[in-house]
Length: 336
Image 1 (tube, rainbow, N blue to C red):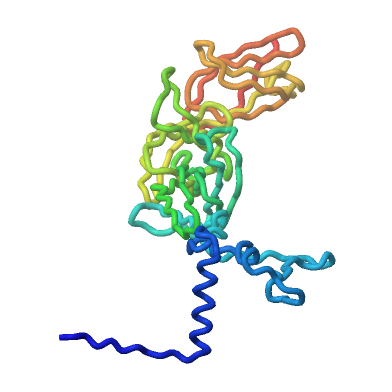
Image 2 (cartoon, one colour):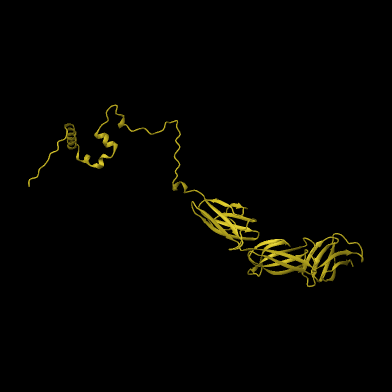
């Protein structure tokens, strides 16, 4: 079967345009027909030179006038937040399942570049119970102190985060009460020292607190402590071990046995005390208990037998005496 080809006749103007395009393609160099070489304005201008007055071929000048300040646009993407500080909330608890500490807590934040030591750089100190800190990304050393109870640990702050760091102090309270001959002592006449339960290589304990007043609550980390209570300023002492439990108040009662004694150096029995006398109280074995200067020094001593030495000028005088618990005595030393 013969095929019948139909020829579509184009309008004369359109045929003229297509013929011109065909001739133009034959005249252009072969490499110019590569589609990739038509992509730049420079090559287009070379193929079609701009005609005078043809503004469309001249690129616009986007530069600002010399008297104009250009403010760059602020980026809003993730790159703009690369140095943004993060928020860290610090909270402290007495125990892991206990109550939050609402007051009395002190926070200290150190540079965490190195291990915590005395040369660490202190960055912040906060007295708020649960502060919210703005910190740059990095490592920090944070110390939470609640009285003598404290906890120090390292935290890592990551970029663009909001986190909560919990510090479980495992803290408890200790209150020491004192009795002298089963009665309350004169106010502020009894103090006590607190030592750790552990001993060093020399058998000594580390002192935690010194000259602590009785009837006050001391906050400590949970553990065993050794307390030494002193009545007066000499050797009337009582020591004991106490256990502080986390989240609880531990009360300890110490009972002192002591005597009060006043010394005087006289030229005759019942005479006037000589001033500027130097006194040394020592045990019968020669261990010095107390030194003082004055006409009528008064000390509180534990029951026992002692030797008192009074020095006046170049001369020294001795006397031995014995005290029982509860005594209020006066010991005269005769110059003879």
